[in-house]
Length: 411
Picture: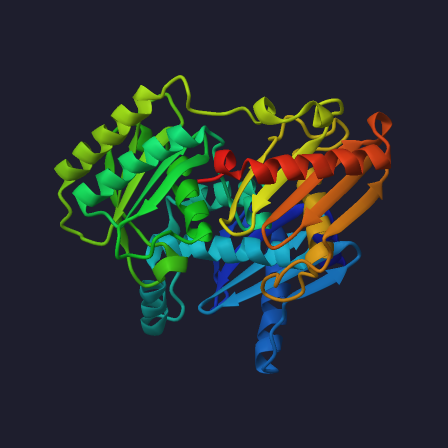
């Protein structure tokens, strides 16, 4: 037990995946041998819980949280000293599992273990570990998993309409089910073919964006690959046409088709139509959020995250404006704690805000949160620059402005 306690003490945060037979599948950032006692103990706890017909969700000990997700035939465990809410850790594990399923499909995974219960799944995810690691790393860099939303690109409504129309024409001509245009990790347009589900689920978009960003080879040339979007259909594959607008930019297009015999030439023509529309607006792509903020919210420095609760999209001021005494990871943990307090995140997912407003005075930092059925806003300030009254007033003004300009912020 002493060695186990020592191993836990050294862990800042990690996650690992094991098969039902106890074989390791994936571990984030460390050598599996260095945490062998932690993995063995976690598997034993899960086994005991299953034998007692219970579900083990989490344990806390000496400032360390262990979060469990049983997704037979896989078990996922997160270990963290960062004081993240359990539901945030659990959602991270759900996404990690879903990313594995996106590479294999749930049906294929179940079939393998039905035939060979002791199969070494590492053979199947070999070469894709960087995709899983990048997803895990993103939890400490961006708020998408914590919010349950993907990042939207702020832009003039006229430009977004033109881009969405170009995407809509492209998927109609190609027969694709969905099309997504992305710039610098922000979704510009997301459209669906009439007759299909009109929009992909936000969780699947997060997984899709991580898949594309994690594969540097996709920048070199157009790619046609199969990919499961597990929140849409965990047992089926889409056929994804992926192409960057150029080798150096962060702009790319994805067309998703459920037809394996899709004509690549049609996708090429559809891509060129979107590319032409994009280039015609080259000088008007993005709106800086500061452009439409009134003077009443410009006189103090702050960091914010704003989410549309109906569209599952968010905008934020990025990692550069986090108060100097906080890292981006620390700020995201605090935002997650505040959100958990406002939503009482004790179940699988929040059912709606229990608090419309929350103020937290934390050392040198003030955190202000607003939540409603329409939107969520979280803001942090350095206390030496602002009083509580001013912080609340600025946050209220910011909320009102962002709500009023949702047509610019969200697609």
